[in-house]
Length: 144
Image (cartoon, rainbow, N blue to C red; front, side, top):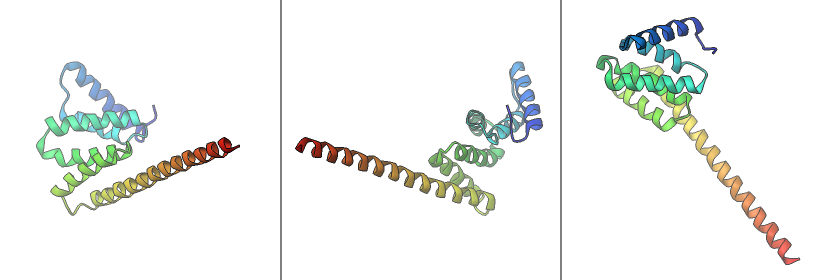
C-alpha cells in the first residue's frame, strides 16, 4: 500500500508487529504506528489508527493524552465522523486553548459539518421534489 510517508510507515509498522508478536507493544511504538495510519489516505488505515489512538488514550501515558486527542480529531475528521471529531478537538482545546493548529482544525470540522448538513438537506429536498413529481404524474395519468 502507498502511504504519505512510506519509509517511516514501514519501519513503524514492522516495529509494531514485532512487538505485538512478543506480546507487548510499547506506547511509543503504538503511537508512532497509529500516527502513520491516521495520516494515510486509506479509510481502513485511518480507522485502525483511530482505534490504536483510542486505546492509547484509555490505557496509555496520561501525559500524552493531549497528543492522542489531537490525532483522534484528525483521524475522525478524515473519516467524516465530524461530531466525534468535534468532541475530541474541544477536549484538546480545553487543555490547550491557544493552540492555533487545533483552532484551525475545529474551524475545518465545523465548516465540513455545515456543508454535510446542507448536502443532507439538498438530498432530502430533492427526494421530496421527486416524490411530489411522481405523485403529480400519477394524478395526471389517473385523470385520463
